[in-house]
Amino acid sequence: MARRRCSRAAGSSPAGRAETADQGVLAGLLAGTDLLVTATSAVAPVVGRAALRTALGDAEMLVLDLGVPRDVDPAGGGLPGLALLDVDAVTAGAGGTADEGADRAVAGAAGEWMAWWSHAQAGPAIAAMRAAEEERLRRSVDALPASERERAWREGRRSLGALLHRRTLELRARVSPA
Image 1 (cartoon, rainbow, N blue to C red):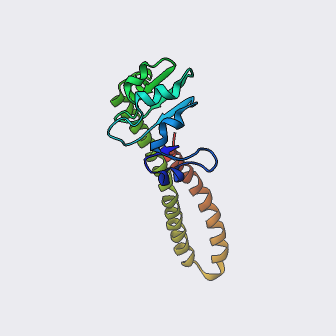
Image 2 (image 1 turned 60 degrees about the horizontal axis):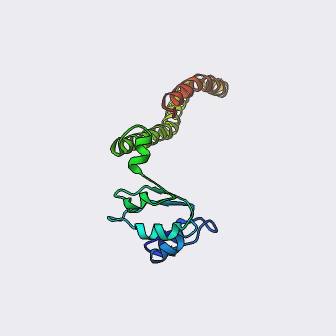
Image 3 (image 1 turned 90 degrees about the horizontal axis):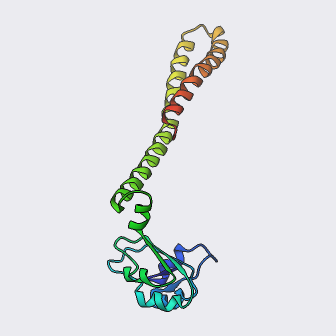
């Protein structure tokens, strides 16, 4: 994993899964690489055609450029043995433009988040509903003669639990992620 600052890369890479290095030594790191995935916020390509040509030698490499704007010089795509896929190529393969692909990705992620959020909100709503119904039962039981309260509370809670169970399941089903 190479980043513009080595200190940031160390926190991004799972321990023992990748080496970190300053970007200045990127060309040397690419030698013998089969797969290169880029995704930076750089305003200009960070991997040039010359670095790719040097790294390739007689080997083959797949480059997946997820940067917008591009992280890899598009001229590198013409090198023998190099397959360069950028965001446009990936989204075109999925049937659309980069903008349409980004729109689908954002809409999908937003939909997943909204489903999760709705489901997370069900818990407090259910707890509040149960607390309100128990309070209503408590007030009704408290109005009874003392000799009847314990039995009424026990049976009332059992009945209340059965009645609220169905409402709880309905509420969870309504907000459950698809």
